[in-house]
Image (cartoon, rainbow, N blue to C red):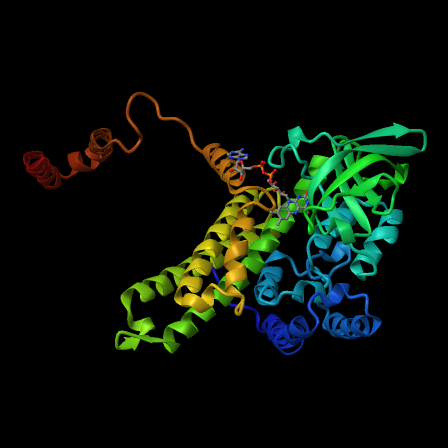
Length: 426
Ligand SMILES: Cc1cc2nc3c(=O)[nH]c(=O)nc-3n(C[C@H](O)[C@H](O)[C@H](O)COP(=O)(O)OP(=O)(O)OC[C@H]3O[C@@H](n4cnc5c(N)ncnc54)[C@H](O)[C@@H]3O)c2cc1C
């Protein structure tokens, strides 16, 4: 019987290497040179490259990509275990060549790009010689792709794109933008005339595309295929976020427990007060449940496909947001006044937690997806009563047992006695 929760020892060694590398090299880098990967300083850049080479030498570069798409091909379960370590350290995904939004865009390129497109964009993205952004959401509505209006018109040897996008993360600093149009997914170099980036918001950009002309070969995948490409991109992105969210929850939990053992109040350490214990126990159970759910979903993707695991990916998506909100709140609360400052990571984590319920699709939409898909597995009952209506079940049981009772008069007598006894009790 295959039902095993242990990690293969050879892979555990890799996880241990990642843990030490992140603790010893990535975390200090985060504090001394925040956002080092994007630093224009050549000396910082060279140091980052040195660290990234260590990751490559370990065979851990671009860990999210399958082998046939140019990555190490760990699959989602192993990727989940890796992300559980990496997700604790701000810049670690970039140090492992696995940071959003580039990862999702690379997945689309790897899966749908022509050889020429892969050479032009995938290779430099993989090597971080180029950065990208994903332009899908529009100002008039993000949750419903049927409301999107950005469109590309063919004009001779070019596509001409017109439209407006909202919340394109890191659009301002991207070299290329993946623009979802009503009739296809297009790759647009940011410097193309007609790409106008609004001053606000600063990090998630509002971009106007006005008569933006790109050559025909900037269409990625089939014409009218944007929704399929977007699904592919977002499905992977959601489970990867969930894996890293486990790491964030664990960080919050570690801080909560350390504090519970370090502070005194009313004659005992606060970890001995029952209401603090309740927060610790609830958080522990919530993280364990989330972790199992995420890893099981990753395993499902490995053994079926992202499409077949869609119900669970959607359920994981809103569950991780909920668990992060609860656990980061509990941690912040147990840290008391210190928790409300920016002197530990917990305040920022709690403030950012609601974002997880919006980015990559709002909770409500994912819940509706789950409910709709789950209900497809059920049928309405016939007549007035549900299948589990007890009087009907009892009658059915008597019918089913009749041959056994007829063959055994003593048992039949006992059954009659039971019937009378139970009728009296009712
Ligand atoms: C941190 C962050 C990064 C992002 N990065 C990008 C990016 O790089 N590229 C990009 O294109 N987009 C990005 N987004 C945008 C994101 O995809 C959208 O915010 C999301 O799809 C929701 O769209 P909206 O913001 O327009 O909300 P709306 O669609 O206006 O929804 C607002 C609210 O209405 C309710 N609602 C909407 N639909 C339903 C429904 N069907 N049932 C019940 N209630 C509903 C919900 O309460 C919902 O929260 C990012 C968002 C965040 C927060």
